[in-house]
Image (cartoon, rainbow, N blue to C red; front, side, top):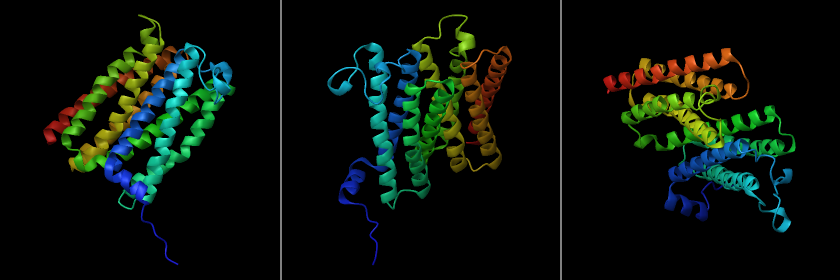
Length: 284
């Protein structure tokens, strides 16, 4: 008995019309939106809205809809997360059933699909228990899924990416780092409140730093053909993730030493990004 691995006509038709690289990019956008909306729900104190129901809310037939503005924040976060989950599953299934998709991409998006139900359970637990440990796990699992899809997206678009995109990624990181610091709790507290808007902006630049840390070394390895330079970019990327971790900790605990360490390492990262831009431009 022979097995037929040819994708079904429906899946093949979708790939022909949209292109898998566009499907993956759209999934990444939905994942990003879900994370930022989750930050908004937490920042506005809406995580326990919907009368602490999950997955239902607190109004309409079967409590499917929100009854007030705080409930709307939480409900809309869940609504977008639902579509992000469908997109993640669709990306994984399509990659699995399409022989032309890079097997590395398939492994990444399938891992993202495996993590998705874990993330859903953690989301439920933020409503059921709402402890800082669960909130942290919920956040870092979301960032891991985001990172997996950034890597997968770069892999499927790599034939269109050039050395200029390395410089662009480093410039994005260099632009994001100062805002990441200025919007952090220890700095913004001296000027304004750590409001929901400020938190969304800070986590937006956090994702920008993470994306820059991934894109620059990945594209550089393919386009620059310089082992020492790509090693430098990889080291800068790892260091960027350390800064992101420290920035998250400053929002979780009050420690002058930790705040100082975060600011210093962020300053070093900014210099590393700027030096990377100079080195790449000289190389190209």
